[in-house]
Image 1 (tube, rainbow, N blue to C red):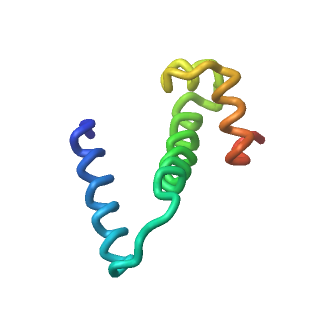
Image 2: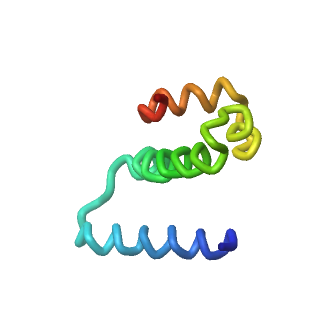
Image 3: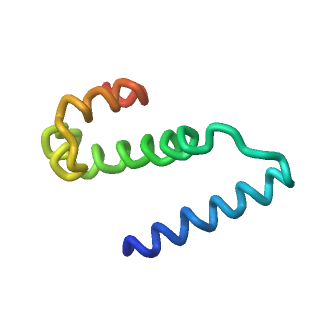
Length: 78
């Protein structure tokens, strides 16, 4: 899956989101989108990294402590 494909999926989802609003103005979209993407991203990367936080942090380009904080925020630590 290419970066372009992911961008197209996000774009299509956002277009659908605006259609579903039926003219109502959105609120807090940035935080909503980050939260919607971040949790599944962390779940998949942690799974593929065999729950190895150091490896996952490296793949994500994050500091391990930052990754740990995000895992706690999303209640993904076992």
